[in-house]
Length: 401
Ligand SMILES: NC(=O)CC[C@H](N)C(=O)O
Image: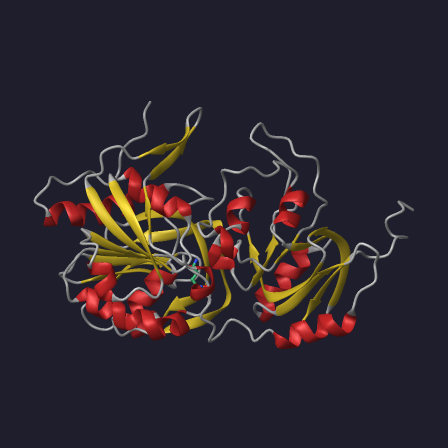
Protein backbone atom coordinates (compact mmCIF):
# COMPACT_ATOMS: atom_id res chain seq x y z
CA UNK A 1 0.00 0.00 0.00
CA UNK A 2 1.44 3.40 -0.92
CA UNK A 3 -0.84 5.45 1.24
CA UNK A 4 -2.48 7.37 -1.55
CA UNK A 5 -5.05 4.67 -2.26
CA UNK A 6 -6.18 5.14 1.33
CA UNK A 7 -6.64 8.87 1.27
CA UNK A 8 -9.92 10.38 0.04
CA UNK A 9 -9.95 11.87 -3.44
CA UNK A 10 -9.34 15.62 -3.31
CA UNK A 11 -10.52 16.19 -6.88
CA UNK A 12 -13.21 14.87 -9.22
CA UNK A 13 -13.70 14.92 -12.96
CA UNK A 14 -17.34 14.38 -13.85
CA UNK A 15 -18.44 13.98 -17.45
CA UNK A 16 -21.87 14.77 -18.84
CA UNK A 17 -22.59 11.04 -19.36
CA UNK A 18 -22.20 10.52 -15.60
CA UNK A 19 -18.62 9.14 -15.70
CA UNK A 20 -16.95 10.00 -12.40
CA UNK A 21 -13.17 9.96 -12.09
CA UNK A 22 -11.33 10.57 -8.84
CA UNK A 23 -7.91 12.16 -8.43
CA UNK A 24 -5.84 14.71 -6.53
CA UNK A 25 -6.62 18.40 -6.58
CA UNK A 26 -4.26 21.08 -7.90
CA UNK A 27 -4.70 24.79 -8.47
CA UNK A 28 -7.76 26.67 -7.27
CA UNK A 29 -10.27 25.15 -4.88
CA UNK A 30 -13.84 24.95 -6.21
CA UNK A 31 -15.38 23.62 -9.39
CA UNK A 32 -15.62 24.65 -12.97
CA UNK A 33 -17.49 23.36 -16.05
CA UNK A 34 -16.41 23.33 -19.67
CA UNK A 35 -15.90 21.25 -22.78
CA UNK A 36 -13.10 18.72 -22.32
CA UNK A 37 -10.51 18.53 -25.08
CA UNK A 38 -7.08 16.92 -25.27
CA UNK A 39 -3.86 18.63 -26.28
CA UNK A 40 -0.92 16.55 -27.53
CA UNK A 41 1.84 19.17 -27.12
CA UNK A 42 4.80 17.90 -25.08
CA UNK A 43 6.01 21.37 -24.11
CA UNK A 44 4.50 24.80 -23.67
CA UNK A 45 1.78 24.10 -21.11
CA UNK A 46 1.90 27.65 -19.80
CA UNK A 47 1.26 29.15 -23.25
CA UNK A 48 -1.60 26.67 -23.75
CA UNK A 49 -3.18 27.50 -20.39
CA UNK A 50 -3.02 31.25 -21.15
CA UNK A 51 -4.28 31.01 -24.75
CA UNK A 52 -7.63 32.85 -24.70
CA UNK A 53 -8.89 30.46 -27.42
CA UNK A 54 -9.38 27.90 -24.64
CA UNK A 55 -12.11 29.93 -22.94
CA UNK A 56 -14.93 27.54 -22.05
CA UNK A 57 -12.68 24.47 -22.26
CA UNK A 58 -11.02 22.06 -19.85
CA UNK A 59 -7.66 20.90 -21.20
CA UNK A 60 -6.42 17.34 -20.77
CA UNK A 61 -2.73 16.97 -21.56
CA UNK A 62 -1.81 13.68 -23.22
CA UNK A 63 1.81 14.22 -22.18
CA UNK A 64 1.99 12.72 -18.68
CA UNK A 65 4.50 15.08 -17.04
CA UNK A 66 3.21 18.63 -16.93
CA UNK A 67 4.60 21.30 -14.61
CA UNK A 68 8.20 20.13 -14.40
CA UNK A 69 9.64 23.41 -15.75
CA UNK A 70 7.48 25.50 -13.43
CA UNK A 71 5.91 28.81 -14.42
CA UNK A 72 7.37 32.21 -15.29
CA UNK A 73 6.15 35.70 -16.19
CA UNK A 74 7.25 35.52 -19.83
CA UNK A 75 5.31 32.59 -21.31
CA UNK A 76 1.90 34.20 -20.98
CA UNK A 77 -0.15 34.41 -24.16
CA UNK A 78 -3.22 36.30 -23.05
CA UNK A 79 -2.99 40.06 -23.46
CA UNK A 80 -6.11 40.90 -21.56
CA UNK A 81 -5.04 39.99 -18.02
CA UNK A 82 -8.40 41.07 -16.66
CA UNK A 83 -10.02 38.18 -18.52
CA UNK A 84 -7.46 35.75 -17.05
CA UNK A 85 -6.73 32.89 -19.36
CA UNK A 86 -10.20 31.70 -20.09
CA UNK A 87 -9.34 28.04 -19.66
CA UNK A 88 -11.82 26.34 -17.33
CA UNK A 89 -9.68 23.55 -15.93
CA UNK A 90 -6.71 21.26 -16.35
CA UNK A 91 -6.48 17.46 -16.25
CA UNK A 92 -3.12 15.75 -15.73
CA UNK A 93 -1.76 12.25 -15.37
CA UNK A 94 1.20 12.74 -13.03
CA UNK A 95 1.50 14.93 -9.96
CA UNK A 96 3.32 18.23 -10.45
CA UNK A 97 6.96 17.85 -9.42
CA UNK A 98 9.26 20.58 -8.12
CA UNK A 99 10.18 22.88 -11.01
CA UNK A 100 13.55 22.44 -12.63
CA UNK A 101 14.31 25.25 -15.04
CA UNK A 102 16.37 28.44 -14.84
CA UNK A 103 13.38 30.55 -15.94
CA UNK A 104 10.98 29.15 -13.37
CA UNK A 105 9.63 31.58 -10.78
CA UNK A 106 7.03 29.39 -9.13
CA UNK A 107 5.44 25.97 -9.08
CA UNK A 108 2.70 25.37 -11.64
CA UNK A 109 0.33 24.51 -8.78
CA UNK A 110 0.81 27.99 -7.22
CA UNK A 111 0.48 29.64 -10.62
CA UNK A 112 -2.80 27.79 -11.29
CA UNK A 113 -4.14 28.90 -7.90
CA UNK A 114 -3.30 32.56 -8.60
CA UNK A 115 -5.12 32.39 -11.93
CA UNK A 116 -8.11 30.65 -10.37
CA UNK A 117 -7.74 27.54 -12.55
CA UNK A 118 -9.04 24.29 -11.02
CA UNK A 119 -7.10 21.11 -11.81
CA UNK A 120 -6.89 17.39 -11.18
CA UNK A 121 -3.98 14.93 -11.35
CA UNK A 122 -3.90 11.15 -11.19
CA UNK A 123 -6.27 10.72 -14.14
CA UNK A 124 -5.71 8.03 -16.78
CA UNK A 125 -5.39 10.62 -19.54
CA UNK A 126 -4.78 7.93 -22.19
CA UNK A 127 -8.19 6.42 -21.44
CA UNK A 128 -9.82 9.86 -21.36
CA UNK A 129 -8.24 10.74 -24.72
CA UNK A 130 -9.42 7.43 -26.20
CA UNK A 131 -12.92 8.23 -24.96
CA UNK A 132 -12.83 11.69 -26.59
CA UNK A 133 -11.61 10.16 -29.87
CA UNK A 134 -14.49 7.71 -29.75
CA UNK A 135 -17.35 9.87 -28.55
CA UNK A 136 -16.26 13.47 -29.17
CA UNK A 137 -15.44 16.25 -26.71
CA UNK A 138 -17.76 15.93 -23.70
CA UNK A 139 -18.86 18.63 -21.32
CA UNK A 140 -17.64 18.08 -17.79
CA UNK A 141 -16.70 19.54 -14.42
CA UNK A 142 -13.40 19.54 -12.56
CA UNK A 143 -13.86 19.90 -8.81
CA UNK A 144 -11.17 20.40 -6.15
CA UNK A 145 -11.88 20.08 -2.41
CA UNK A 146 -8.78 19.63 -0.20
CA UNK A 147 -10.84 18.00 2.57
CA UNK A 148 -12.44 15.53 0.16
CA UNK A 149 -15.97 16.87 0.76
CA UNK A 150 -17.67 17.80 -2.49
CA UNK A 151 -20.88 19.74 -2.87
CA UNK A 152 -22.28 17.26 -5.39
CA UNK A 153 -25.51 19.20 -5.92
CA UNK A 154 -23.79 22.40 -6.93
CA UNK A 155 -21.30 20.46 -9.10
CA UNK A 156 -24.23 18.87 -10.94
CA UNK A 157 -25.98 22.22 -11.24
CA UNK A 158 -22.86 23.78 -12.74
CA UNK A 159 -22.53 20.96 -15.28
CA UNK A 160 -26.19 21.26 -16.25
CA UNK A 161 -25.90 25.04 -16.59
CA UNK A 162 -22.97 24.81 -19.04
CA UNK A 163 -24.60 25.08 -22.45
CA UNK A 164 -21.70 23.68 -24.53
CA UNK A 165 -19.66 25.70 -27.01
CA UNK A 166 -22.04 25.65 -29.96
CA UNK A 167 -23.69 29.05 -30.28
CA UNK A 168 -21.40 30.73 -27.72
CA UNK A 169 -19.76 34.06 -28.53
CA UNK A 170 -16.84 33.92 -26.10
CA UNK A 171 -14.67 36.42 -27.99
CA UNK A 172 -16.48 39.27 -26.26
CA UNK A 173 -15.42 37.85 -22.87
CA UNK A 174 -11.71 37.77 -23.65
CA UNK A 175 -11.24 40.68 -26.06
CA UNK A 176 -9.53 43.89 -25.01
CA UNK A 177 -11.83 46.59 -23.61
CA UNK A 178 -9.66 49.36 -25.03
CA UNK A 179 -7.64 49.97 -28.17
CA UNK A 180 -3.89 49.80 -27.53
CA UNK A 181 -0.58 49.80 -29.39
CA UNK A 182 1.90 46.92 -29.53
CA UNK A 183 5.61 47.10 -30.36
CA UNK A 184 7.16 44.12 -28.55
CA UNK A 185 9.23 41.77 -30.74
CA UNK A 186 10.13 38.08 -30.31
CA UNK A 187 12.06 36.43 -27.49
CA UNK A 188 15.80 35.83 -27.88
CA UNK A 189 18.03 33.73 -25.62
CA UNK A 190 19.97 36.00 -23.29
CA UNK A 191 17.98 39.07 -24.35
CA UNK A 192 14.32 38.28 -23.69
CA UNK A 193 11.72 40.24 -25.63
CA UNK A 194 12.74 43.23 -27.74
CA UNK A 195 11.10 46.48 -28.85
CA UNK A 196 10.42 47.52 -32.43
CA UNK A 197 12.50 50.66 -32.98
CA UNK A 198 11.57 52.00 -36.43
CA UNK A 199 8.24 50.64 -37.60
CA UNK A 200 7.85 50.48 -41.38
CA UNK A 201 4.23 49.38 -41.42
CA UNK A 202 1.04 49.73 -39.44
CA UNK A 203 -1.34 46.82 -38.91
CA UNK A 204 -4.69 46.93 -37.13
CA UNK A 205 -5.36 43.65 -35.32
CA UNK A 206 -8.94 42.81 -34.38
CA UNK A 207 -8.70 41.05 -31.00
CA UNK A 208 -11.09 38.12 -30.69
CA UNK A 209 -8.79 36.63 -28.02
CA UNK A 210 -5.37 37.30 -29.51
CA UNK A 211 -2.17 35.59 -28.44
CA UNK A 212 0.80 37.84 -27.72
CA UNK A 213 3.14 35.90 -29.96
CA UNK A 214 1.05 36.76 -33.00
CA UNK A 215 1.51 40.45 -32.23
CA UNK A 216 5.25 39.86 -31.73
CA UNK A 217 5.51 38.05 -35.08
CA UNK A 218 3.90 41.09 -36.73
CA UNK A 219 6.31 43.42 -34.91
CA UNK A 220 9.21 41.19 -36.05
CA UNK A 221 8.11 42.03 -39.60
CA UNK A 222 8.54 45.74 -38.89
CA UNK A 223 4.88 46.43 -38.19
CA UNK A 224 3.58 48.40 -35.26
CA UNK A 225 0.22 47.03 -34.30
CA UNK A 226 -2.92 48.80 -33.14
CA UNK A 227 -5.13 46.27 -31.36
CA UNK A 228 -8.87 46.98 -31.36
CA UNK A 229 -11.78 45.25 -29.55
CA UNK A 230 -13.68 42.43 -31.28
CA UNK A 231 -16.72 44.70 -31.63
CA UNK A 232 -14.81 47.46 -33.49
CA UNK A 233 -16.70 48.65 -36.56
CA UNK A 234 -15.12 48.81 -40.02
CA UNK A 235 -15.10 52.61 -39.65
CA UNK A 236 -13.23 52.33 -36.29
CA UNK A 237 -10.67 50.00 -37.86
CA UNK A 238 -10.17 52.15 -40.97
CA UNK A 239 -9.90 55.33 -38.88
CA UNK A 240 -6.42 54.10 -37.83
CA UNK A 241 -5.39 54.12 -41.49
CA UNK A 242 -3.83 50.63 -41.47
CA UNK A 243 -1.58 49.18 -44.17
CA UNK A 244 -3.15 45.81 -43.46
CA UNK A 245 -5.76 44.21 -41.21
CA UNK A 246 -5.27 41.15 -39.03
CA UNK A 247 -8.11 38.96 -37.66
CA UNK A 248 -7.04 37.11 -34.51
CA UNK A 249 -7.65 33.69 -33.03
CA UNK A 250 -10.21 33.36 -30.27
CA UNK A 251 -12.58 31.07 -28.38
CA UNK A 252 -16.13 29.90 -28.95
CA UNK A 253 -18.33 29.30 -31.97
CA UNK A 254 -17.35 31.33 -35.06
CA UNK A 255 -20.98 31.46 -36.20
CA UNK A 256 -21.92 33.26 -32.95
CA UNK A 257 -19.08 35.79 -33.08
CA UNK A 258 -19.77 36.14 -36.79
CA UNK A 259 -23.11 37.81 -35.98
CA UNK A 260 -21.24 41.09 -35.52
CA UNK A 261 -17.80 40.30 -36.99
CA UNK A 262 -18.94 39.10 -40.43
CA UNK A 263 -20.63 42.37 -41.53
CA UNK A 264 -17.48 44.25 -40.42
CA UNK A 265 -15.19 41.89 -42.34
CA UNK A 266 -17.39 42.16 -45.44
CA UNK A 267 -16.99 45.94 -45.42
CA UNK A 268 -13.22 45.61 -44.89
CA UNK A 269 -12.97 43.20 -47.85
CA UNK A 270 -14.33 45.95 -50.11
CA UNK A 271 -11.41 48.23 -49.24
CA UNK A 272 -8.86 46.00 -51.02
CA UNK A 273 -6.50 46.23 -48.05
CA UNK A 274 -4.31 43.19 -47.26
CA UNK A 275 -5.99 40.96 -44.71
CA UNK A 276 -4.73 37.93 -42.77
CA UNK A 277 -6.68 35.71 -40.37
CA UNK A 278 -5.59 33.05 -37.89
CA UNK A 279 -7.85 30.30 -36.49
CA UNK A 280 -11.07 32.05 -35.35
CA UNK A 281 -9.99 34.88 -37.70
CA UNK A 282 -9.79 32.28 -40.51
CA UNK A 283 -13.23 30.93 -39.67
CA UNK A 284 -14.76 34.43 -39.54
CA UNK A 285 -13.16 35.35 -42.88
CA UNK A 286 -14.54 32.09 -44.32
CA UNK A 287 -18.03 33.01 -43.08
CA UNK A 288 -17.71 36.54 -44.52
CA UNK A 289 -16.80 35.01 -47.89
CA UNK A 290 -19.92 32.82 -47.87
CA UNK A 291 -18.53 29.54 -46.50
CA UNK A 292 -19.97 27.71 -43.48
CA UNK A 293 -18.35 26.41 -40.30
CA UNK A 294 -19.02 23.22 -38.42
CA UNK A 295 -18.23 21.67 -35.02
CA UNK A 296 -15.54 18.99 -35.19
CA UNK A 297 -15.69 15.60 -33.50
CA UNK A 298 -12.49 15.72 -31.42
CA UNK A 299 -10.92 18.91 -32.74
CA UNK A 300 -7.24 19.58 -33.32
CA UNK A 301 -5.16 20.59 -30.31
CA UNK A 302 -1.42 20.06 -30.32
CA UNK A 303 1.96 21.16 -31.60
CA UNK A 304 2.65 18.36 -34.07
CA UNK A 305 -0.01 18.64 -36.78
CA UNK A 306 1.20 18.22 -40.38
CA UNK A 307 -0.29 20.64 -42.90
CA UNK A 308 0.34 20.84 -46.64
CA UNK A 309 0.68 24.22 -48.32
CA UNK A 310 -1.05 23.44 -51.62
CA UNK A 311 0.45 26.56 -53.23
CA UNK A 312 4.03 25.33 -52.77
CA UNK A 313 3.63 21.58 -52.13
CA UNK A 314 5.58 21.95 -48.88
CA UNK A 315 4.56 20.23 -45.65
CA UNK A 316 4.87 22.11 -42.37
CA UNK A 317 4.45 20.87 -38.81
CA UNK A 318 2.04 23.19 -37.09
CA UNK A 319 0.52 24.20 -33.81
CA UNK A 320 -3.25 23.71 -33.76
CA UNK A 321 -6.06 24.57 -31.41
CA UNK A 322 -9.54 24.45 -32.85
CA UNK A 323 -12.81 22.63 -32.33
CA UNK A 324 -14.70 24.23 -35.22
CA UNK A 325 -13.67 24.19 -38.88
CA UNK A 326 -14.52 25.79 -42.23
CA UNK A 327 -16.37 23.25 -44.36
CA UNK A 328 -14.29 22.86 -47.47
CA UNK A 329 -17.25 21.89 -49.64
CA UNK A 330 -18.83 25.23 -48.76
CA UNK A 331 -15.95 27.36 -50.13
CA UNK A 332 -17.55 29.44 -52.88
CA UNK A 333 -16.03 30.02 -56.33
CA UNK A 334 -13.26 32.59 -56.22
CA UNK A 335 -11.88 31.21 -52.96
CA UNK A 336 -8.91 28.85 -53.13
CA UNK A 337 -8.16 26.24 -50.51
CA UNK A 338 -4.46 26.87 -49.84
CA UNK A 339 -3.73 24.46 -46.96
CA UNK A 340 -5.05 21.10 -45.75
CA UNK A 341 -4.56 19.09 -42.57
CA UNK A 342 -2.67 15.88 -43.35
CA UNK A 343 -4.31 14.23 -40.34
CA UNK A 344 -7.85 14.32 -41.65
CA UNK A 345 -7.91 16.35 -44.87
CA UNK A 346 -9.87 19.18 -43.26
CA UNK A 347 -9.48 22.74 -44.49
CA UNK A 348 -6.47 24.54 -43.03
CA UNK A 349 -6.21 27.67 -45.15
CA UNK A 350 -7.81 29.82 -47.85
CA UNK A 351 -7.09 32.78 -50.06
CA UNK A 352 -9.29 35.12 -52.08
CA UNK A 353 -8.46 34.97 -55.78
CA UNK A 354 -6.99 38.24 -57.01
CA UNK A 355 -7.04 39.88 -53.58
CA UNK A 356 -4.31 40.21 -50.91
CA UNK A 357 -6.50 38.30 -48.45
CA UNK A 358 -5.76 34.90 -46.88
CA UNK A 359 -6.03 32.96 -43.64
CA UNK A 360 -5.00 29.74 -41.92
CA UNK A 361 -6.78 27.49 -39.45
CA UNK A 362 -3.64 26.76 -37.45
CA UNK A 363 -1.22 28.87 -35.39
CA UNK A 364 1.84 30.07 -37.36
CA UNK A 365 3.01 32.04 -34.31
CA UNK A 366 3.51 28.68 -32.52
CA UNK A 367 3.91 29.41 -28.77
CA UNK A 368 4.02 26.58 -28.22
CA UNK A 369 5.13 24.63 -31.25
CA UNK A 370 7.42 24.57 -34.26
CA UNK A 371 8.18 27.71 -36.24
CA UNK A 372 7.73 26.14 -39.68
CA UNK A 373 4.83 28.47 -40.48
CA UNK A 374 6.41 31.83 -39.60
CA UNK A 375 6.65 32.42 -43.37
CA UNK A 376 2.96 33.35 -43.36
CA UNK A 377 3.74 36.61 -41.54
CA UNK A 378 6.21 37.43 -44.32
CA UNK A 379 3.54 36.50 -46.88
CA UNK A 380 1.12 38.93 -45.22
CA UNK A 381 3.60 41.78 -45.05
CA UNK A 382 4.66 41.07 -48.64
CA UNK A 383 1.10 41.95 -49.66
CA UNK A 384 1.56 45.23 -47.76
CA UNK A 385 4.98 45.78 -49.38
CA UNK A 386 3.45 45.15 -52.83
CA UNK A 387 0.77 47.79 -52.22
CA UNK A 388 3.46 50.25 -51.15
CA UNK A 389 5.69 49.47 -54.13
CA UNK A 390 8.40 47.97 -51.86
CA UNK A 391 10.56 44.93 -52.63
CA UNK A 392 9.32 41.53 -51.47
CA UNK A 393 11.09 39.60 -48.71
CA UNK A 394 11.88 35.87 -49.14
CA UNK A 395 9.35 33.73 -47.25
CA UNK A 396 11.96 31.21 -46.16
CA UNK A 397 15.21 32.33 -44.61
CA UNK A 398 17.79 29.64 -43.87
CA UNK A 399 18.70 29.57 -40.19
CA UNK A 400 22.12 31.04 -39.37
CA UNK A 401 24.87 28.37 -39.47
N1 LIG B 1 -7.63 28.99 -31.70
C1 LIG B 1 -8.75 29.47 -32.16
O1 LIG B 1 -8.82 30.61 -32.64
C2 LIG B 1 -9.98 28.61 -31.99
C3 LIG B 1 -11.12 28.99 -32.90
C4 LIG B 1 -12.46 28.42 -32.49
N2 LIG B 1 -12.85 28.88 -31.20
C5 LIG B 1 -12.42 26.89 -32.53
O2 LIG B 1 -12.46 26.27 -31.52
O3 LIG B 1 -12.36 26.32 -33.60
